[in-house]
Amino acid sequence: MALVAMWDRAFRAWHFSVSYNQLLLRSLSNDTSPARIDVLFSNVYFLHMPTTFARLEIHKGEGFDSPHVEIPVGTRGEWFTINTGEGYVYATHCQWHEDEGNALTPSHFGPLKRTD
Image 1 (cartoon, rainbow, N blue to C red):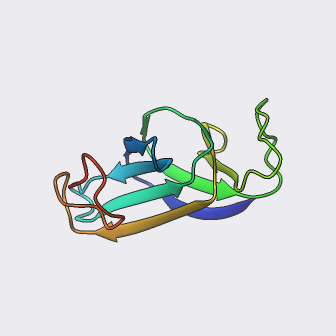
Image 2 (image 1 turned 30 degrees about the vertical axis):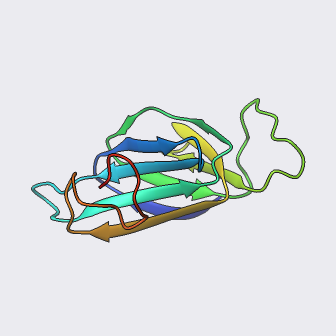
Image 3 (image 1 turned 90 degrees about the vertical axis):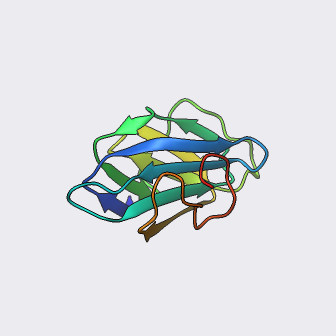
């Protein structure tokens, strides 16, 4: 599996949009880093994960022994694993943005509830 991104800091599930199938994970600034990091999964078809993470490591692609989940033929996307199987997401994209915003600053990814 290919490493997508890795951070040694706390993240939590911040927002999920049913209408756009978007999942936003967020790490707020802290004593060791003034940056806020938003991680967005787009076109989420399936997800299974805890709501908080002490660190975040995301892999994607072949080699993942997918859970007992049937993804309908023709559904676009791929598996993303979080922290070596602590969680997993089937989505089309995973992207992130780092800035100096706080919990109330709008996300780089647009006007999502709880992010503006």
